[in-house]
Image 1 (cartoon, rainbow, N blue to C red):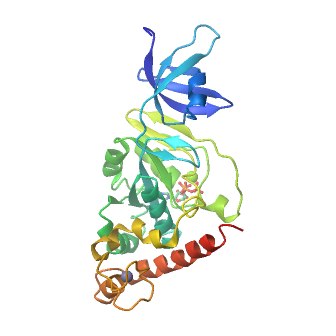
Image 2: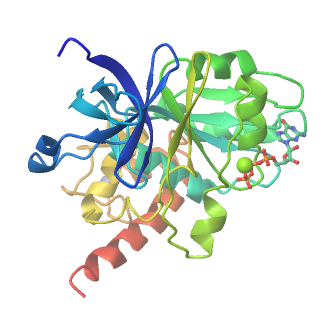
Image 3: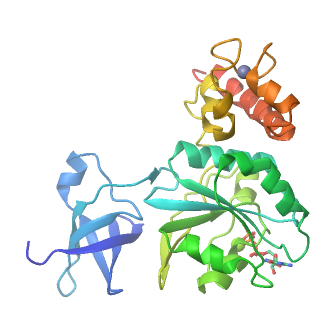
Length: 295
Ligand SMILES: Nc1nc2c(ncn2[C@@H]2O[C@H](COP(=O)(O)OP(=O)(O)OP(=O)(O)O)[C@@H](O)[C@H]2O)c(=O)[nH]1
Ligand SMILES: [Mg+2]
Ligand SMILES: [Zn+2]
């Protein structure tokens, strides 16, 4: 196929795929039949080989290159970083933040915590550093208002496809446009979820210079618990890892067992008490969902 080019899928609508080539040109494509046989559906974010269409004719998705990561809701591939934004205003919802960290971990996407609005108050930044230092993930103090930390944020954004997640009002849209000039079209993650709506959301990949950002509310909060055995929840806590295997009981839920190394680490101040308390809240949730799995 002498005509083949490389591109990235930026949008999928009704069986048509929009792919962008390095020169910025957008091609409208359909997927070859062989993908259906392979039970493989092209996703936004997929790096592909394509043959351009001619005139009014669409072109073809010829090959899907190996994926680095895969989100199912919304279906997007190759997300490199999810930027979890918190701020002093509205006050951080750390249970949501922990949940998003678990979700990222379970789907093989690197999380980073971005504390925005540091111009207002730095206490949340201090708190976040204490609470999450043991995760060894990037943490940034930024302000869309004053420009603090935006260079570091741009550095992260240049490393691959990124998406933003976090409570409504923390400044995701403002930050993104301050850092890249891009505008997010869709809303936020938390508001829709708390209303219990289950809207179909199409992800779209936006480009600006070196930046590739997903225009999507983040990802579904319903997903991480499905099929998760309660005993494996702790596997998504990298900060517990140094203590695994040190408890008297094996396996240990780190809930209230005697001689539990995680609970001991809390007593010694090596692990945050609140982080572990929130783990207990999530553990109970996961146990409930697990008990009802055949209902
Ligand atoms: N002081 C201050 N205000 C900010 C900063 N960044 C954003 N804001 C303000 O915070 C408010 C919310 O910002 P948005 O960017 O709309 O927040 P969002 O996270 O996109 O909210 P949703 O789209 O509802 O999820 C706006 O009034 C912004 O002007 C900042 O760094 N400092
Ligand atoms: Mg917004
Ligand atoms: Zn334990």
